[in-house]
Image (cartoon, rainbow, N blue to C red; front, side):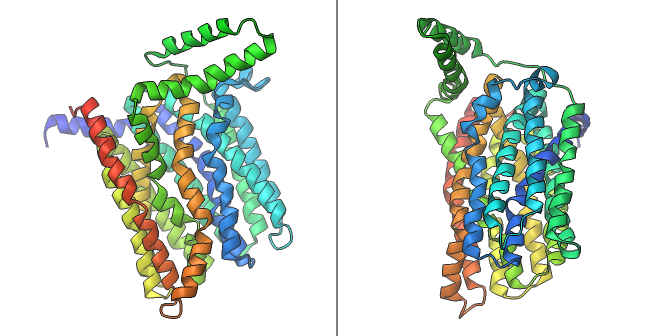
Length: 462
């Protein structure tokens, strides 16, 4: 290995020691904590209490909240919060408010019995999901603005590190507590862990506000627009100027920078994780129906899976630093889709085989961690720092919407397939379902080729 290569690897590792990069571990934990608690962990709770798979699938539509966060992202981007914004700054103020909502919503869920208070549980889960989505808007903007482009791969990796630790807590941790104590105690504990994000937000500093080239021109158009509506009453004029600057300008900026390619990018973003999200709702019900115990699911799916996902996230961050995110998109899409076939293999076996489950979880989490770092870094590079929250919220909303819509009907699909094939193969319906979710990755793979060619033309490899 040459001296330059050694230096390059030393520089790669050194990025993980930057203070901002380290801070993202704790903020990533805060972001990751609520997700499973309104998704697969909640699905396991509901299934154990006798709630039907079809109902569980419909309850998973709570997650669509994340897919519509772009609707209120301009508010998070532009509107100051009384007292909090002056005290903490625009990003940390919204983060703290959202983190308080997450902890409070989880605590309320802990006192609900899904057999008799399912509707109240759904209401409080919506509070958690809405607060979590709001936190994501502010936190993603903080992450992008806190460092320059050279550290985006590293911050994406450490953000995922914290996120995966939280997933471990909300997955394996919650399942362990539910197994040996109660589901109520599990959600009370998760609410207490919400303090990690609150304390971190209070301890860190607000990032400096930076604007990308060309932003001043758009902001000048806001001033021109304000002059054109100056004859209107003050309240109406201020509202129109806010809407123009907060909503129109971010979208005009994105389409002005990428032209027709902006449509391709949005379509690709929406399809990138379709395979993964569409199958995720039925993962825990699948394990339970196969006969795995909650502690087995926790040991293999959560703890061992956590280790593999962290390795994948760090590997993805290093690859982004050395190769670039755009050139890694096609392999990432292919591996995401292909990893679903390992679960189909487990379903065809038809019995709770720990070894096969371990192999499936290893592949799925390694690929998920690696592709997550790649995609986060890629999306971060698409934003203009003048409109970080709004643009990144749009990207991540579109990223989850198709999968969430399909995921909501996944329980119904599995029920129908099981009725058709379970007489021949006990879990044949699940096996075909996982194959179907793998095939959903084909359109994203084709679009990844188009996106890669465009970005390689603009940024030739050094």
